[in-house]
Amino acid sequence: MKSIPIPSLKLTLAFVRLELMDVVRHPAYLFPTAVLPLMLFVFFGVPNAGTPAEAGFMLGSFSVFAVLGVAFHQFGVGIAQDRATPWQRYLRTLPASPVSQFVARIAAAILVAAVGVTILAVVAVATTPLAFSLGQWVLLAAALTLGAVPFAVAGIALGYWTSAKSAIAMANVIYLPLSYLGGLWVPPMDLPAFVQQISIFMPSRMVAELVWPIPFGFPVGWYPFAGLAVFFFLFSLLAWWGYAREEQRQFR
Image (cartoon, rainbow, N blue to C red):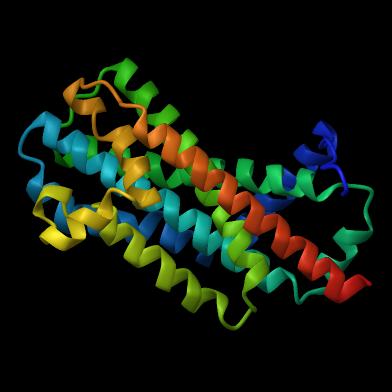
C-alpha cells in the first residue's frame, strides 16, 4: 500500500495562489459565497435578530451556510470542471503530490469563505443589534475555520466523483438539504419533529453547534468535534478514492 506523501510547503503555497487567482478570474463563482448567504440573511436573519444574542445566532447560521457554498460550488464544481481541461492534466505532470493540492484547496476554501463571512459580519453589525466582543469574533473565526475543513474535503470528493455537467446539480442536491437539515435557515427547535431527529447527525449541524454557543457564552460540548472528525475522515477517504480513480482512468 502506498504511503501518503508529505506535502511541500512551497508547492502548497503555489497551489493556493493558483486557486485564488482562478477565483478572481471567475467572479461568478462568488455568488454562492457572498451574495446568496447575504440575501438569505437579510430576508430571514435580520427580522429574527431582535437581541444581540439572537443576532449572533443568525450570523453564525448564515456564516456556516456561506462556508458550505464555498466548499461545494467554488471548489467542488470547480474541480469537476477542471478535470476536463488540459490544465488539470498538466498539473498531474508536476512534481507535486496530490496531498499538496488537497491542502492548498482547503486553505483556499477557507480564505475565500472568509470573504463571504466578512461581508455578512459587516451587514450584521449595520442592520442588527449584534454586539460581539473581540474574543467572540476570534471564537467565531476559529469555529468556522475548523468547520470549513471537512466541508472543503467533501467538496474535493464531489469534484472527483461527478462530471462537469452534473457537478452543479449534485452540489445543490447536497448543499441545500444539508443547510436546511442542519438548522441553518430555520432554528433547529422550529424544524418539524422528524427533521429535528435527523438534524443532530448532519455535519452542517455539527459546525453550527460550534458557532451557536458563542453569542450566548455557552461552552461547546465534545459532540460536534467528534462528529466533524469522523466526517473529515470519511470525506478524506472518499476524496482520495476519487482522485485515485481518476488517475487510474486517465493516466494508466
